[in-house]
Length: 126
Image 1 (tube, one colour):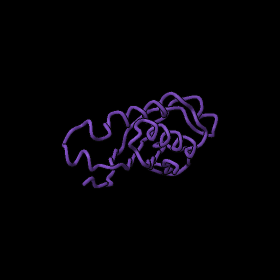
Image 2 (cartoon, rainbow, N blue to C red; image 1 turned 90 degrees about the vertical axis):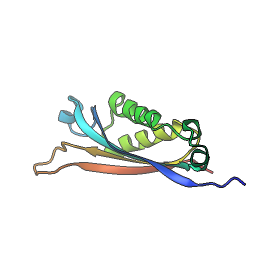
Image 3 (cartoon, rainbow, N blue to C red; image 1 turned 30 degrees about the horizontal axis):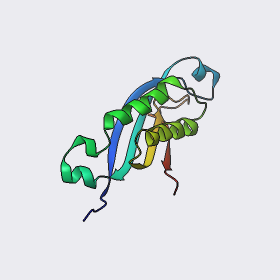
Image 4 (tube, rainbow, N blue to C red; image 1 turned 135 degrees about the vertical axis):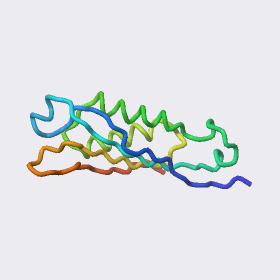
């Protein structure tokens, strides 16, 4: 009997540099971002086999997120987070849903603020 075992791969605090922001000063220089990913999938095959080929390789997910942050440019964190989540979802057909949190580590506000961020969740239709 095959049993679906939903689980999630967690990737935390992926540090990347990109050019994103609504202000002109943000659009002219790279700045630091941090990305967290939660990737839901059926982990039953991997739990049963203990084989890498039966799960999603988190290195592939890291590369998909990294390419999006470092090669594209968005004005809003909402757009960047949605693009990251969509790229990760597209990385492997076994992925059911992705939550991508993108944090700007040096937000342009006149206060001592550690970060400002947005989380977006995308999933497969149907």
